Length: 254
Image (tube, rainbow, N blue to C red; front, side, top):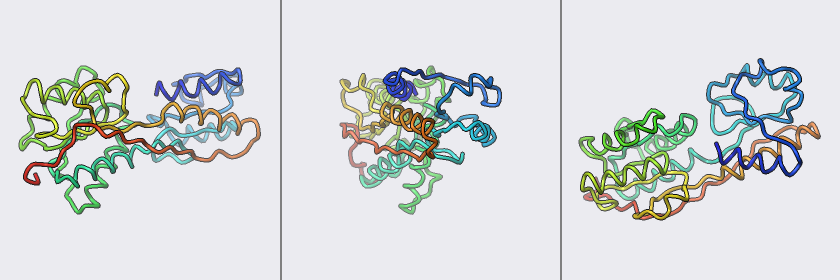
């Protein structure tokens, strides 16, 4: 979210305007505050269709961030497609005991989980065999979640970590504390391609999403809609896959 907000702020600064962060429902916004807005980027967590109707009634153009069941134009960064692609890679390498390390962000975790399960179904595999360990959104829970996933029996041959911070902790735990070689004995893929982890080896196989560009483009689209009254269309961005050193064929087709 911070990168997307930074992108939106960059776009708004170029037209000498500002970006506001608001967490209360739109029906509680004061009329003078609502009338000063040019558009809204909606983070779908805890947002209802009634909230969107309030925006429509106030003629506020909006874009929904990410994938959700809410109706309307949205910003698509390809979370589900990326997770399916990463899972297909692991399946092609013979991995069947694949576990998920989740809990990074509820809004981002859901489409990734959907992509993983979609890849399993497309391959004719039982999705019930996918184990999931979550940090439950607690930063302090990352260490324990990584430890728990390594102690699953039978142990997974591959783990899909829903953020590089989770994947990095898992890699550390596996090699330093459990004596498990990555990727010879455990393959790891993750998401978000955080630059501060690029210098740790083995380098994570990960995916980058265009958060900054999405925020920038969303602000431009909403500003244009506010000025012209034109309808807002969905915008989408393709993920970028960064090959790393943390995947290998499963031993004995496990």
